[in-house]
Image (tube, rainbow, N blue to C red; front, side, top):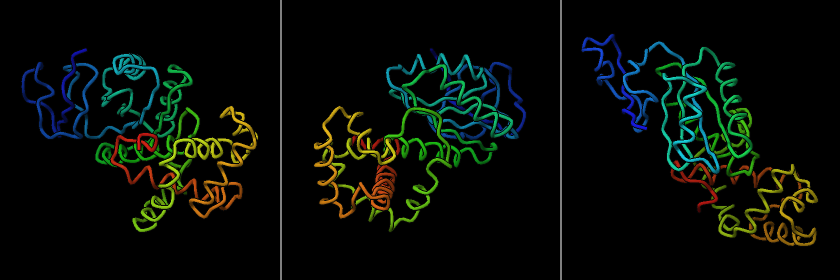
Length: 252
């Protein structure tokens, strides 16, 4: 599908209709319109800002579904089944409804983060959606629609640079050991229930207990205690946010 780069206009176009998207100033690099010649983006518009990470979908398949639900005014930036969507939305609830409709269409193998911003704050909205998406994936949260409130504590702690670096360093030995990382993520997803986490991992209870003991030995925090699990959960979020945007903890 041929697309044209996203370009915005701060005043009505004066050129010919075929050139209505002629540049006045770029909004964000890499975004493309779902339909060429769709016209300039109104600077007074408010937008749903979605982060998407999908398993088993090509970028073309994602774009086709997004276009069907969001319309030709939508702007996308996708690579390898991951990226962002900007779609006109009158308020936060409309943005959330749109995210849930897309989630229902894509099925169980997609994570969607959702924010809502007026035109002049879109860059901040994209950062928020990206940070929420990275954190929920790093914490092993189940596929679904996620908002800032779902990871507000983790993001608030990680926003302190000194604390974030310290937590990222604390969890690094676990991140470097895939079996320990998967075990910690499963425990977090199971809300600390070891039996459920072991079942999800298809391992024996004694195996998960051994691995959790190794995590405590490496970090000094016990994942079987509420306080320790919360610290390790926040450390995973900090580690995800200290990596370059577009990567995940599992790619470390």
